[in-house]
Image 1 (tube, rainbow, N blue to C red):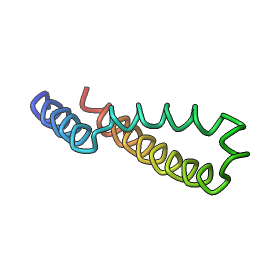
Image 2 (cartoon, one colour):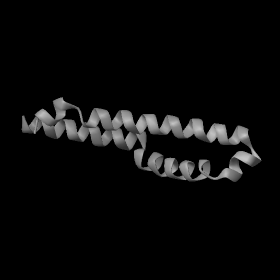
Image 3 (cartoon, helix red, strand yellow):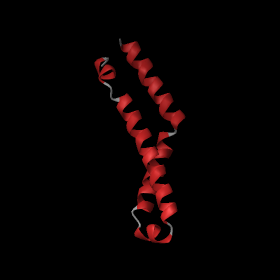
Image 4 (cartoon, rainbow, N blue to C red):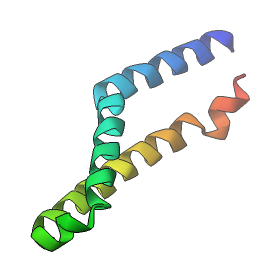
Length: 78
């Protein structure tokens, strides 16, 4: 069981790297800051909406990855 857990953790780490989650989290922080700026909405509603959509997609990807990482099956291997 310890070997299964180790293999699973390794797979999760590889998936995280291939998705480049650390970069995506940084981008999400940048987008959130930009989206919260009222001037962005005044200057270009279209750009603001595009950034909001991008932030939503990144947020969903991160949340889905976290859900997979925290599944009960994984915890059961501990």
